[in-house]
Image 1 (cartoon, rainbow, N blue to C red):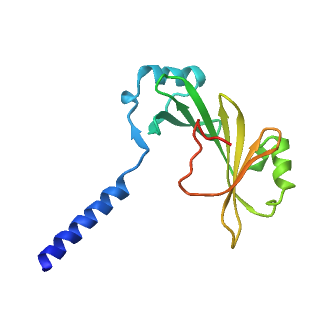
Image 2 (cartoon, rainbow, N blue to C red):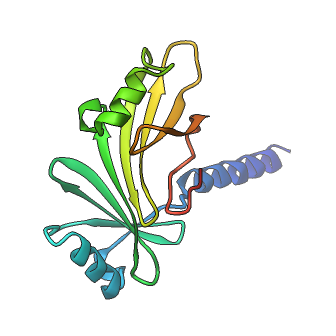
Image 3 (spheres, rainbow, N blue to C red):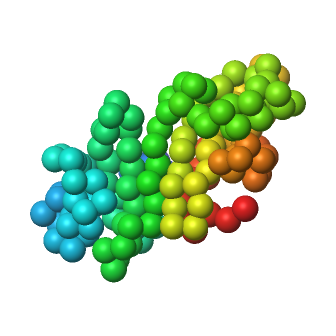
Length: 167
């Protein structure tokens, strides 16, 4: 009986370890990125000399630093640029005035800013302000460039903005 239990225990633990190690996002070597994709990045960002690459949801994503900001560039399988994400940290001053004013004059003005990102896509530019406060669920606020709110939702740890995220 102990042997069966031990075997079952090992099988369950192995499954948990493999599940914990699996990830939809896989780092890849630049040599494994198609030349057309690397060239598309160089056309869009000619000053980038070193990028780390990942596969995310069918896209090649280049991660690098540009002008002090962490930058993520999404390029599809056809080597077409689809989205750039710039991480502003918690610096509200990097937002357009209309977005900063809308947040500071809105219902969540007294919440703590956890992170701010700017997203540039082929169809629009928008901003995500992640906020938190004691005793409440964290929230994600999406703003258009003019300061209008596109979406206000509870933050989920596994939700990621992609080139196909809709509002």
